[in-house]
Image 1 (spheres, one colour):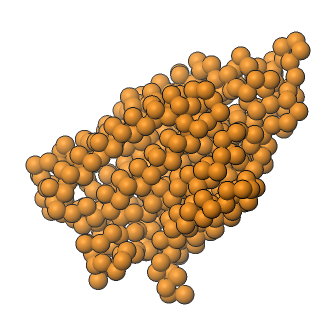
Image 2: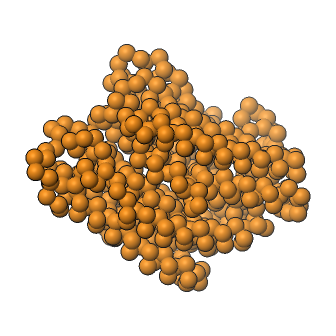
Image 3: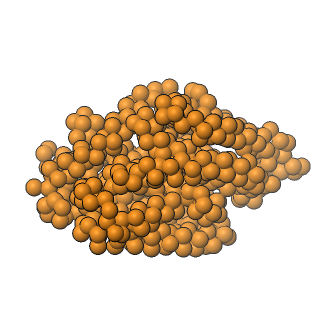
Length: 500
């Protein structure tokens, strides 16, 4: 049992990685591939939940020095309150994504490489959150790029290849920035272990290449999260990707950047954190306004939701920027809840598109089709309430905590702007609902008798309501993570203490 507990932080990474290798062998039966992949993903989720439980109950991080190499020379895997919670978030949504593929009519779902690539996406996400080494964060982020680009390029949408190229080249730019930052930090401090690097930077915060490294990492995570002004690739990418993939990319993959911002401001660059936080507040406010306005004028449901992600991530950045324990806890809660909401909404958009006469999420195609899809309309209405932040959904909890933390932090100007800009969410959600479910369908328009299924978005909307009515466990976990983050000595002591 001790061996299992000691290696628990490794299992959420290794389970989907080994599962992806085995999925390559299962080539003849698509049903066998999907059930195998779903079983692997659920097992990985179970390991992540056990890790979160252990971290929460003990109040300490679970650390593994891979290969038995001592600190700081080996690769550290660290399950602390933040990384464990984000791993659960990612694998919960990824499990729902695989459930969606059970009833998806996308041709890409039938390709043998689809499920191995999907599990590699899960491996990259878990690894990015649980690694304690900056270079391995780069490696896992590249695994995300490779799998996400390939899955999008194979999309049924004729713009899939174009969107994949945009994502790939933007990610290549981010990779270049990150490698330059890694090189600068290694030359300056001689280590890439996050705990050791944080301690050395704190002891010598005037390293000659430190300022460029901070700027390069900041740009890297802005691209990863599609933060303004690095957002322009996202709408095309998410509109063209297969629904099961776009729902993952727009909900949990963008959280890699959010995770990076949290580590930058609370662990690595504490001395530079005030300036970084000011930048995040400004960019977050711009993102909320620009994303909301762009979503209001979007001509495609998926594009609308992609711009909505820009706005929702803006709220999270403002919370990180305020930097207090309640604000960081609110940002973490917002990140978790947004992942569930956005994945569900994109799945519903995919469901509607699959029932349209021509498979498309464009408003001029799906207007009025909702008259034949009342169950999807009910789920979309609940998801829209969550995006708007209206009770009894988890979106209300997210915005209530964020706005309350803004008052505590005395961030009145950005709070006023994002509060007023929240009205834009109401506008574009109601507009989409009216066009699809209230407008009369065109003469002779009929929904296809068969299409994608509602099981996965239905389960996610159920969680949206559950976390709106019973938010205490998530808020407690996020608050514990915020307290942990604001005392970087805890992280350093946990990793160094496990290195002997």
